[in-house]
Amino acid sequence: MMRRELVTAVRTTLVTLAVTGLAYPLLTTAVAAVLFPERAAGSLIADGAGDPIGSELIAQPFARPGYLQPRPSAAGEKGYDAAGSSGSNLGPTSKALRERAEKELQRLQEENRNAPGPVPAELITTSASGLDPHLSPEAALWQAPRIARARNVDEARVRTVIEANVEGRDLLVLGEPRVNVLRVNRALDRHFGKVTSAAR
Image 1 (tube, rainbow, N blue to C red):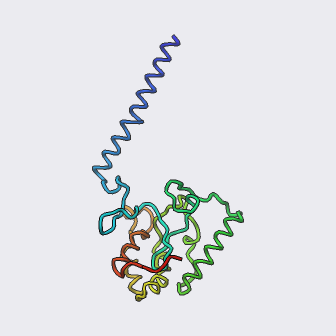
Image 2 (spheres, helix red, strand yellow):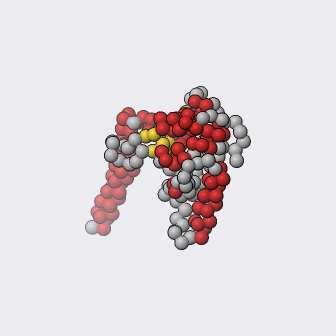
Image 3 (cartoon, rainbow, N blue to C red):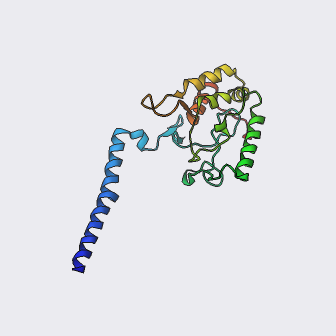
């Protein structure tokens, strides 16, 4: 009796492992590769030579003033670590969170002296994953004066590039309009050339 139950349990475990651990992942990967080949490969963005420079799904830091800067990141020790995706898990009463936000606010105000209005909250706060590759159009346009000054071009031209890269809602109703930071920075380089000044 006991042996029969043990054999049944082992058989059930092996079948479940084969179906859910092997067959299902292989099937979904194959379907994704056929229906969404770019996304299944990681949504990589390549340079002119075809070498990958990043993914449109994972934020990366841009410190030079001539580039659109993403939200701050708490993922990993130095941030933007795709292997350590997470938020800071600091609560609203956390002194460390308040100090980090104040430091980020001061940096943004110093680097964006000609920006219109107050600093957008999303540029001070991290996302839950720490790897959000998007900004709202408002937060992106807020950075336009700094980008224009660093690239020595008219601000209206920078704003035009940002506005041309606004992505709409998915299926017309899901999410909010947004811009992908890496895609906008690539567009800025295409229009105005690469920024060669040293990073801050």
